[in-house]
Image (tube, helix red, strand yellow):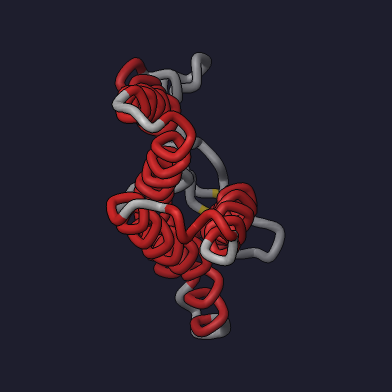
Length: 189
Protein backbone atom coordinates (compact mmCIF):
# COMPACT_ATOMS: atom_id res chain seq x y z
CA UNK A 1 0.00 0.00 0.00
CA UNK A 2 1.48 3.25 -1.08
CA UNK A 3 1.75 6.73 0.21
CA UNK A 4 -0.60 9.54 -0.74
CA UNK A 5 -0.71 13.25 -0.07
CA UNK A 6 -3.12 14.30 2.65
CA UNK A 7 -5.21 17.50 2.61
CA UNK A 8 -2.32 19.54 4.07
CA UNK A 9 0.05 18.38 1.39
CA UNK A 10 1.98 16.13 3.80
CA UNK A 11 2.79 12.55 2.97
CA UNK A 12 0.52 10.12 4.83
CA UNK A 13 1.48 6.49 5.02
CA UNK A 14 -0.83 3.55 5.15
CA UNK A 15 -0.87 1.86 8.50
CA UNK A 16 -0.06 -1.76 7.60
CA UNK A 17 -2.17 -3.02 10.52
CA UNK A 18 -5.36 -1.13 9.70
CA UNK A 19 -5.10 0.00 6.08
CA UNK A 20 -5.87 3.58 7.16
CA UNK A 21 -4.31 6.56 5.44
CA UNK A 22 -3.05 8.65 8.33
CA UNK A 23 0.09 10.24 9.63
CA UNK A 24 1.67 9.07 12.87
CA UNK A 25 0.22 12.15 14.61
CA UNK A 26 -3.28 11.53 13.19
CA UNK A 27 -3.09 7.92 14.33
CA UNK A 28 -1.96 9.04 17.81
CA UNK A 29 -4.83 11.55 17.99
CA UNK A 30 -7.36 8.87 17.03
CA UNK A 31 -5.88 6.37 19.48
CA UNK A 32 -5.87 8.96 22.25
CA UNK A 33 -9.59 9.63 21.66
CA UNK A 34 -10.32 5.90 21.78
CA UNK A 35 -8.31 5.49 24.98
CA UNK A 36 -10.13 8.40 26.64
CA UNK A 37 -13.49 6.75 25.90
CA UNK A 38 -12.27 3.51 27.48
CA UNK A 39 -10.90 5.34 30.52
CA UNK A 40 -14.20 7.15 31.07
CA UNK A 41 -15.98 3.83 31.49
CA UNK A 42 -13.35 2.37 33.83
CA UNK A 43 -12.84 5.54 35.88
CA UNK A 44 -16.55 5.93 36.60
CA UNK A 45 -16.78 2.43 38.04
CA UNK A 46 -13.59 2.87 40.06
CA UNK A 47 -14.73 6.20 41.50
CA UNK A 48 -18.10 4.79 42.60
CA UNK A 49 -16.52 1.66 44.12
CA UNK A 50 -13.80 3.67 45.84
CA UNK A 51 -16.33 6.12 47.25
CA UNK A 52 -18.32 3.28 48.80
CA UNK A 53 -15.16 1.72 50.20
CA UNK A 54 -14.17 4.97 51.87
CA UNK A 55 -17.60 5.27 53.47
CA UNK A 56 -17.58 1.73 54.94
CA UNK A 57 -15.16 2.56 57.73
CA UNK A 58 -17.63 5.14 59.10
CA UNK A 59 -20.52 2.68 59.39
CA UNK A 60 -21.42 1.47 62.89
CA UNK A 61 -21.10 -2.19 61.91
CA UNK A 62 -17.45 -1.71 60.87
CA UNK A 63 -16.38 -2.06 64.53
CA UNK A 64 -17.89 -5.57 64.54
CA UNK A 65 -15.68 -6.85 61.71
CA UNK A 66 -13.16 -9.56 62.48
CA UNK A 67 -9.45 -8.89 62.16
CA UNK A 68 -9.37 -10.86 58.90
CA UNK A 69 -12.24 -8.82 57.45
CA UNK A 70 -10.58 -5.57 58.48
CA UNK A 71 -7.36 -6.72 56.80
CA UNK A 72 -9.33 -7.52 53.64
CA UNK A 73 -10.92 -4.08 53.87
CA UNK A 74 -7.53 -2.34 54.16
CA UNK A 75 -6.16 -4.35 51.23
CA UNK A 76 -9.25 -3.48 49.18
CA UNK A 77 -8.94 0.25 49.92
CA UNK A 78 -5.24 0.18 48.99
CA UNK A 79 -6.02 -1.69 45.76
CA UNK A 80 -8.78 0.81 45.00
CA UNK A 81 -6.35 3.68 45.53
CA UNK A 82 -3.77 2.09 43.24
CA UNK A 83 -6.47 1.45 40.63
CA UNK A 84 -7.63 5.05 40.70
CA UNK A 85 -4.04 6.27 40.37
CA UNK A 86 -3.33 4.03 37.38
CA UNK A 87 -6.56 4.92 35.56
CA UNK A 88 -6.25 8.67 36.21
CA UNK A 89 -2.52 8.64 35.43
CA UNK A 90 -2.95 8.90 31.65
CA UNK A 91 -4.69 12.26 32.09
CA UNK A 92 -1.74 13.64 34.04
CA UNK A 93 0.74 12.13 31.60
CA UNK A 94 -1.08 13.78 28.68
CA UNK A 95 -1.41 17.13 30.42
CA UNK A 96 2.29 17.31 31.34
CA UNK A 97 3.45 16.30 27.85
CA UNK A 98 0.98 18.37 25.79
CA UNK A 99 2.74 20.57 23.28
CA UNK A 100 6.02 18.64 23.38
CA UNK A 101 5.33 16.62 20.20
CA UNK A 102 5.23 13.34 22.11
CA UNK A 103 1.67 12.23 21.37
CA UNK A 104 2.59 8.74 20.05
CA UNK A 105 4.72 8.08 23.14
CA UNK A 106 1.96 9.48 25.36
CA UNK A 107 -0.54 7.06 23.83
CA UNK A 108 1.82 4.13 24.40
CA UNK A 109 2.47 4.97 28.06
CA UNK A 110 -1.17 5.83 28.74
CA UNK A 111 -2.15 2.47 27.28
CA UNK A 112 0.31 0.71 29.57
CA UNK A 113 -1.07 2.54 32.62
CA UNK A 114 -4.60 1.59 31.54
CA UNK A 115 -3.65 -2.09 31.32
CA UNK A 116 -2.10 -1.91 34.80
CA UNK A 117 -5.26 -0.17 36.00
CA UNK A 118 -7.45 -2.96 34.61
CA UNK A 119 -5.43 -5.62 36.41
CA UNK A 120 -5.64 -3.59 39.63
CA UNK A 121 -9.38 -3.13 39.09
CA UNK A 122 -9.73 -6.90 38.77
CA UNK A 123 -7.94 -7.33 42.12
CA UNK A 124 -10.00 -4.57 43.74
CA UNK A 125 -13.30 -6.07 42.56
CA UNK A 126 -12.36 -9.54 43.79
CA UNK A 127 -11.18 -8.19 47.14
CA UNK A 128 -14.35 -6.10 47.61
CA UNK A 129 -16.51 -9.11 46.72
CA UNK A 130 -14.61 -11.26 49.19
CA UNK A 131 -15.19 -8.76 51.99
CA UNK A 132 -18.89 -8.32 51.19
CA UNK A 133 -19.60 -12.03 50.82
CA UNK A 134 -17.66 -12.96 53.98
CA UNK A 135 -19.73 -10.47 55.97
CA UNK A 136 -22.98 -11.53 54.31
CA UNK A 137 -22.53 -15.32 54.36
CA UNK A 138 -20.18 -16.03 57.28
CA UNK A 139 -18.93 -19.24 55.61
CA UNK A 140 -16.58 -20.71 53.06
CA UNK A 141 -19.13 -20.40 50.27
CA UNK A 142 -17.98 -16.77 49.93
CA UNK A 143 -14.55 -17.89 48.75
CA UNK A 144 -16.07 -20.19 46.11
CA UNK A 145 -18.38 -17.43 44.87
CA UNK A 146 -15.52 -14.96 44.62
CA UNK A 147 -13.41 -17.56 42.78
CA UNK A 148 -16.21 -18.13 40.29
CA UNK A 149 -16.70 -14.40 39.76
CA UNK A 150 -12.93 -13.86 39.40
CA UNK A 151 -12.93 -16.49 36.68
CA UNK A 152 -15.84 -14.72 34.96
CA UNK A 153 -13.99 -11.37 35.09
CA UNK A 154 -10.90 -13.00 33.60
CA UNK A 155 -12.93 -14.53 30.80
CA UNK A 156 -14.79 -11.31 29.97
CA UNK A 157 -11.85 -8.93 30.30
CA UNK A 158 -8.92 -10.98 29.03
CA UNK A 159 -9.77 -14.41 27.61
CA UNK A 160 -12.41 -13.27 25.10
CA UNK A 161 -10.21 -10.48 23.63
CA UNK A 162 -7.16 -12.78 23.46
CA UNK A 163 -9.28 -15.49 21.87
CA UNK A 164 -10.50 -12.99 19.23
CA UNK A 165 -6.89 -12.06 18.47
CA UNK A 166 -5.86 -15.71 18.19
CA UNK A 167 -8.79 -16.45 15.87
CA UNK A 168 -7.97 -13.46 13.72
CA UNK A 169 -11.34 -11.77 14.34
CA UNK A 170 -9.61 -8.43 13.97
CA UNK A 171 -8.82 -9.12 10.32
CA UNK A 172 -10.57 -7.27 7.57
CA UNK A 173 -12.30 -9.91 5.46
CA UNK A 174 -11.94 -7.94 2.23
CA UNK A 175 -8.17 -7.47 2.25
CA UNK A 176 -6.87 -10.25 4.50
CA UNK A 177 -4.57 -7.81 6.28
CA UNK A 178 -3.11 -8.51 9.69
CA UNK A 179 -5.36 -8.17 12.74
CA UNK A 180 -6.95 -4.76 13.42
CA UNK A 181 -5.16 -1.63 14.43
CA UNK A 182 -2.42 -2.96 16.73
CA UNK A 183 -1.81 0.44 18.28
CA UNK A 184 -5.52 0.85 19.05
CA UNK A 185 -5.28 -2.08 21.42
CA UNK A 186 -2.27 -0.44 23.02
CA UNK A 187 0.18 -3.01 21.77
CA UNK A 188 3.73 -1.82 21.97
CA UNK A 189 5.82 -1.97 18.84
